[in-house]
Length: 217
Image (cartoon, rainbow, N blue to C red; front, side, top):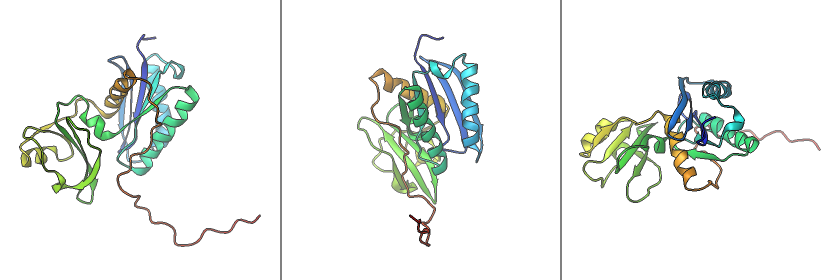
């Protein structure tokens, strides 16, 4: 087995099932299968296949990295629940990484990452000297940006043109970026918090109008 800590990363927050196995700075195996549904059934077979390709087993893992959103509500829950269960059974840390952080990984600063939130809105996060959390905003919600800011993600070219910046492609695909981000977190010490879904807007489903049936004693 490789001497460096082995990290398994996976993400189902978008219309894909993505995973990667990283050891040190070396990507041992990676896959991204586009799919609008079926991630729950596909995730564990895909993870098993990738570990086999990397010449590793579940017991060799030092940590997990998981995509926490923002994105599809069901997809986010699938990955986060899987990561929490695996972390508990394998006794390894699980590190939550947002897709906005994954898009920014390896990019120069200042950098703005963008994800389509539909309804003419964007999930957005700014990365620079001062930390800023992710937000849900309209396309006109960007302001006060330094010239030359890097834009990555949905509508990056248009945003760069409006704000005198520069559009760039992601340096890594999502799962590999999450694994590399997690490796940096691990290098600074073991994480404490468990991964949790990053929801920036309420669920679309409306609550049921009928009262639930009464349970007999």
